[in-house]
Image 1 (cartoon, rainbow, N blue to C red):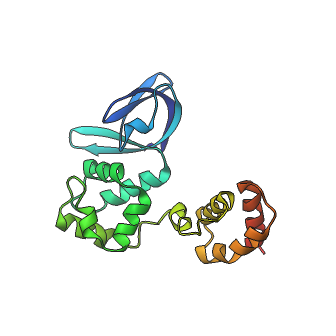
Image 2: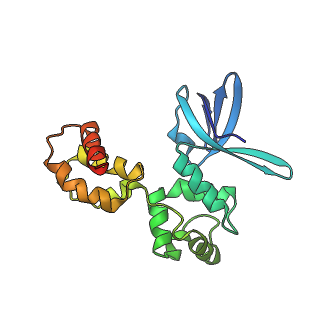
Image 3: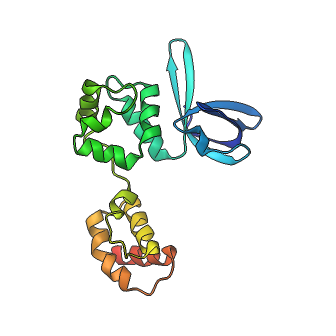
Length: 193
């Protein structure tokens, strides 16, 4: 029903934020409400969950976090509170890596996730959670120019296969670019040939 809301953060509490959108205050449960500051104008991606006697809005700073939340909800035994607890305690890259490696012990560290639920998460989500581009670029050499690393991450985020991006990395490193934007333009040009 709702995709996102843009407004001013009116209040921050330990469990939720209140977002003032055109004079209407929306209470959004968040994984980490303290990521937001009162008075700031923000866009939050929202998910409305309707139960028998409850309608609750959940807010996320990124579309990726919202997507991960919904994927977690698709797992038997995981409800909105457990999904939020998982998102509050781990980034998407760490969660995807744990699932890909079948690390049930890592998943049982989260509130409300026992051994059976952890195994169900692995079974249901293995191969479905994408490791964000920043995680794969983190494996790049330490001496890699930060602007180049950001540009490589952006190319992967734009949908180019990591293998194709890796092939143009050396050409981009040899280019005389100074900014992420310049590396990105050069990378797009190389990948479109």
